[in-house]
Image 1 (spheres, rainbow, N blue to C red):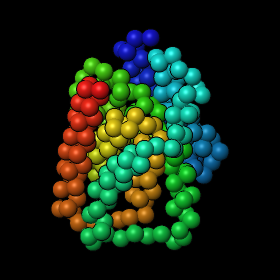
Image 2: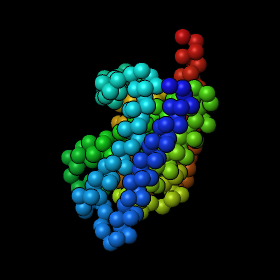
Image 3: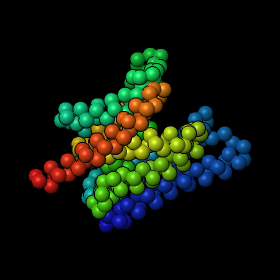
Image 4: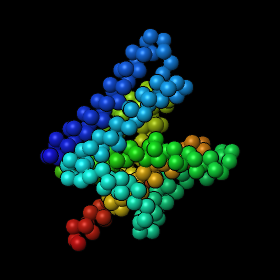
Length: 248
């Protein structure tokens, strides 16, 4: 399978699957049916639409890389890593949520709920990384610069999210959400280039989702500085990693 065909099939499959589910949900809702988290039909629709990026990422990865489902699963749960990989993860997390330490709040009713939320977001978030960071962006980076590959991935990922939001009826402020998604695109992609590890991306994705739910507020001006710093750090980290890979 060629790179172009792999990219095309992934996008058509991922966006096409969730779009078809959205159309079906639209029809059901137009007849007055409730389709959301409160109904079995809603859960089925959310599951089918939400799994699209992971499903097509797995299928295309197996065909393009002559791999197997076992290899993809092993890559996803490859928890044992060089401690440096986890330090980079921590560095990006700290930068991302540093503004909360200055005027923000953290709301946690029970410590064990954060663990449950983490597991939930591995399934509802972390699995997305199989498609976007494990397959789609690396294929783009075979031909185009990291920054442009990240932006293209961000645009496609954003389109997927807004379709998903229609399914689960999430009310998101478009501009703040897109800004956060862009920053996450740089974080996840830089971590994948540096670590070559899918689990690191999935874990970071889940942690950011959890922290976003239990924190609010923060210093706005510091937030601007940290977001710029994240993008610069991501670009420099990728450039350094690519240079080291080319020299080895």
